[in-house]
Length: 222
Image (cartoon, rainbow, N blue to C red; front, side, top):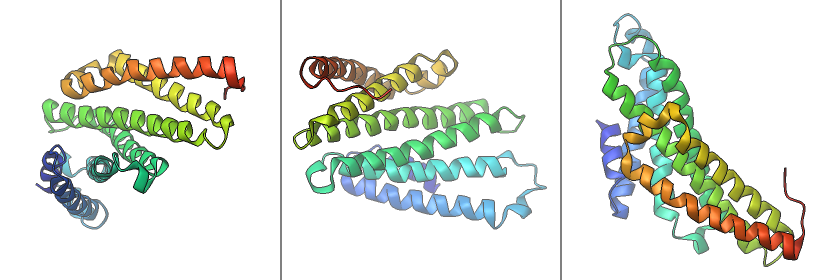
């Protein structure tokens, strides 16, 4: 219940909704964690797949991912006050939680269980798309951070290019991977948003590579 509430509220634009989503996600995380670490022995012989250790761990991670997702969305436009690098770090934490949840889910859902195919697909697509999105945000925010740091040190052009290359590479791989096409199809709006980010990153990267070759002439990070 709390996990579902957190997921619904995080999609609303109001800051108060996102704060309430964080509160619900924290409660969901606590309850899933207690079920996995304290009360799990009582579930072992029930035969219920939704109380399986791996499923509970996946839901814990998704709950944590929602916390960081909300924090990122609350602060992402407040770069001057919080610092672009700190906002990037929040996106990075969200990416880690969602991707770890995806990895656990892929392994767990390969086994026979009484969890419906639709629910499996919904959870995996949620984890995968959120991990992909926050990876792009992590890298593009750090690229922007180093772009601004160039006012103090022109050598940061190589860090700027490195983060943009990483963002572009992982986003292209993530969107074109045929094994996860069905997961992306489940979230068409988010898929479109990610596809719209691609040309922006590609164009900016080309400009910065050209600037480096013609002006700064710094060796790029391998």
